[in-house]
Length: 508
Image 1 (tube, helix red, strand yellow):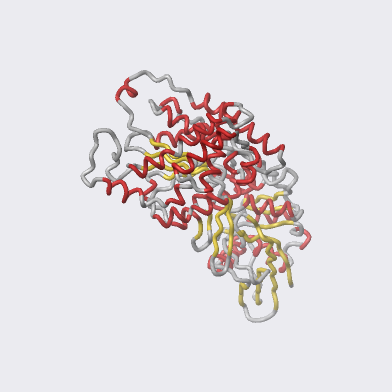
Image 2 (tube, one colour):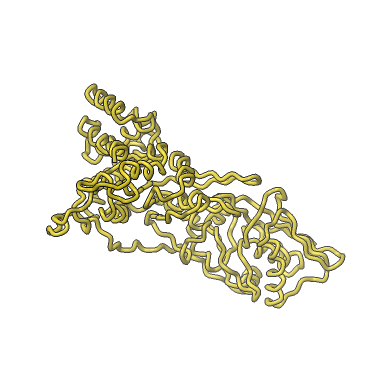
């Protein structure tokens, strides 16, 4: 007696096909699992046995062998319980093989026979669509899986008995519908911040072109407040971006009730975070914060307090938009196209360079503190901004600042210009920050005066080749915000002004 059930193994955000082969043969009573299973899969035989007994069935007193093919692919997770159980039912003759043909199966079994939620329902559903199959999954995963394709056949059951009766044709389960989380009205508004007009301008530019931003200033100057307002300026996720973000969240188990949201991610890990938690990794190679923030914002507060090796490990994902995790027996990649926003004090005491302040340790206080952040990491920050302390006059005066809604409209217009430009060039990018060096040189044609300006600035600020191209991207974004077809000298000058913080850092 032999049966085969289709399921998947998650390799990053992709789902590889796995064939669950079940054989019941004469011999001593024994249940064995082969095919490089991890501990969770090896324990599934006890969950499957108990779930079958709770459902009024029992394993025959024979030898049961379950093979997970391909045998050389490491497999992990509890979602193999349900395909193993269905394979046993088919092998025992309790279910016809035709009932489960054409389905990908995922699900974890509880001891009472109920089917528990598992991570990765959305990638599994996309894999089922690619293979022209349906999906059998837990009822709690049905709405998440329904986002893959409106024509996908989904059987979402809450228990093994219910699934058995549905496959036998005794009952009909309703088709799950995709659910979405409404955009929550944010109470964080840019109008709440007093003063800091230059910082607000920098925040708007960063939002318009998805540029990385570093804010340097004393404690209480509003750096964290500014960063927390950035999500209110960003447009909602497009359909494609929504799918990419949701697949990562699905693998990580961070989709609440299977509902998807088109709000851009905003991740703010604590500075004690490890390298695996930021970049990804661990025993099961899960995505890190840089991937969970894909198509959104990664906020690094108190930047020098992060371990220097952890910060440097972010350089490659930030630059390439992909976090690749390589171990001895596997290699997985997670998308990590993020906008990095960082904040830091100029020194340990926090007030280096501020008027009227003299540090007891002198210049060493600032230089030792700033040296915790490497030059190559700082080179990836498009805007480097000094945020001064807020004066009492700014706090007392009545606010006349623009609201986040007003600024977000300008950001949306600038992004629409960028999207149309790159679409006309046949490129799969939507913002200036993601353009390659060759493309940005092509679309930013500087006149002689602008070339002379950036040449002088490159010498004065010590711009690297990366820094040079990031200035061009930034000036292109500023021109888009002005509705200008060409990058003019004034746009380039403003872009260069946000590189002056490098000089401030060195002098502080």
